[in-house]
Amino acid sequence: QQLAEAIVRLFDIDGIHREPELKVADLAERLGSAEHKVSRAITQVLGERNFNQLVNRHRIAHACRLLEAHPARSVLEISLDSGFASLGPFN
Image 1 (cartoon, one colour):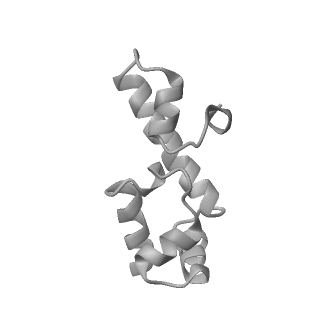
Image 2: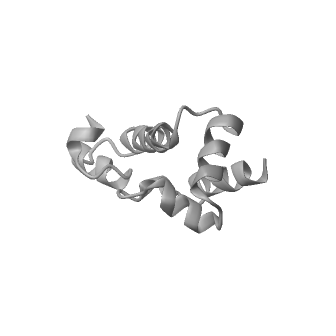
């Protein structure tokens, strides 16, 4: 439970999902935990299918907020600011 709460903090407060090359290994390193424990917390405690689903859900939510708040910004800018490495995965 504590690990899951730490994961949520990294996403909700620190905005770790905005890093385009983010991997579960990076998250585990920041948390000082093993990758398998982080993955288990993501699936069993947070109820996500996997790490990628968690990251993309946060990235999409961030992009939605930006699109609403800054309608004049380009979709490319917003996708990059939300952590997508390019416009293709965002679309």
